[in-house]
Length: 121
Image (cartoon, rainbow, N blue to C red; front, side, top):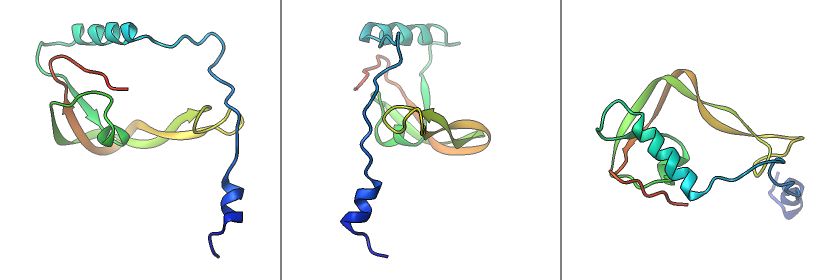
């Protein structure tokens, strides 16, 4: 079998994005800041905040990383459990994305957040 433009054309499928669900309200920068403040206020100490990172968070973090170390999350493994009906899938044919699920272990990194978080789009 050879990869031809005809075979590639069979894999290309144009799907019109139906947009977000009715009633969806996107979060604002202020919403994200308030959520981050609530999470930080609810932690047990004023020490550093570490985030377990695996998958795309390793090569494209959504925040500034002050330090990182190799880590294993015991009791958790990666599994295709998140069903996506936009971008990677459709309502008729949902795409699957890896998330952490109970059992096993997952190798990754822990990333320490700086004192003040700078969110990057």
